[in-house]
Structure formats: structure tokens, C-alpha cells
Length: 272
Image (cartoon, rainbow, N blue to C red; front, side):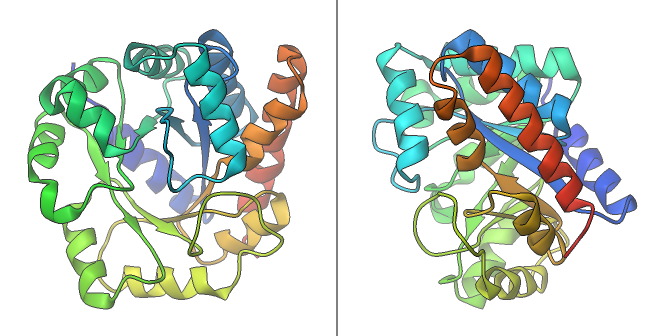
């Protein structure tokens, strides 16, 4: 079985055809448990997410703020492994038929084996990989494996990226471009700011790929604000916080994830 990059492309095209941004949720695998994490992904889809990123928990998540770090710590203490991440992708995709990506730092993939990871992610029905810390210049091996297995390779651009750098990054990527709205780490913020709109404009000048914005969106008002200029709105910490706030009550956590997805899905349809 090959990966489902086409499903990812179709989800983004479908949102565009409806004159709205796509809603992309992020949830770490293995949090609060492996089974609970799978159910959380399904709940996000049930609530209205178009695409879900499944995080591969990492001991040193340099781009992630305290909320996602807390979730990663819980998953790692519970012994989550790459097999559990792949199982999360497999079961969530099989249950929903929707595109599921993995977001991971490069080191675990490199250690696991590039070809092996790409093949197993594709076999699980994954749509691709978001690799925030893999430099484009060192990505050829991964990109070849990903293309061979029908997987998207999503790179992250930041407000600090110069135009020439943006062009190099977007030329190497596929699926969509992940635009980090702010300098710094993930987390909810009071305002997403104008910086994100300018980054989207600059990125669009270099590529036909959809440009999706993450880092800082936590409610429907912010989702609408970002949806006014982006092709997709990415939300992570706000979902994770809902599960943390449920304090071990899995049913309450899943209901909260579903409710937040519904709220955000309404937001991306308002577009500012």
C-alpha cells in the first residue's frame, strides 16, 4: 500500500472549493494513552477537522511549548514507541478515511531507518510527514523515500526565512507548506498577529502549494482571522490542553476535543 498524499491534496482542494480554510488538528500519539490518543484523533475528525497531524513524542521537542511538552512527557513515561505512532495513524485513518500525517523531529526517523519509516507510514495509510527540524539541504534521502511511497513532505517556514530561502524550501516540499505564524514555540496566544499574513503572502509568491498556518491559534475567532489569508489553520496546543484539563476523565477529554474541533470548524468557515 502506498501513502495517501492524494487524500491530503483532495482535502485541501475541497476546503478551497468551499471558499474556506482547512482545519488541521494536532494530537500527540500515546496521549493520554495509546488507545486514548487514537480516540482523540477520531474525535477531532468527528468534530470537523479535515486533516490531523499525529505527533511522534520526543524527549527534546525544541519547537513545542509547555502544553505539548507535558503531553509528550506523559506519552514517553507510558512507553510510547514508533509502532504506537504508526498504529495511531493506521486506526484513525481506517476508521475515518481522512488524511493523517505524522509530525516528528528528524532524529527518531533517522534512527529508525528512513526507508523503513516511509514504507511503514505508507502501509499504515499515512498521508505524509511534517519535519520541522530537517534542513532542506539534508532532505534528499527522505524525499526520495517519501515520493516512492506516496507520502507528502511538509516543511516549515518561519517569519525569519528570507525570500530566497522560502523558495528553496517550498520547491522541495509537497502536500502543503507549514507556515509558523510567530517566532518561538507552540502554544496558545492572545493574538496571532499580522506577521503570519505577511509570511503567507511571501510564501505564496514562491509556490502553488497550499500554505497552512500554525502556532498560536486556540479559538474560533483566531481561526477565522487566520482563515482570511491562509489555506489551512493548524491547531495543536488548544486540543492537548482540553485533554489535560479533563484530568484523566477520558470521556470528558474526548467530548472537549470534539467540541473544540466543531468550534474551530465554524471559525474557518467565517474567514475573518
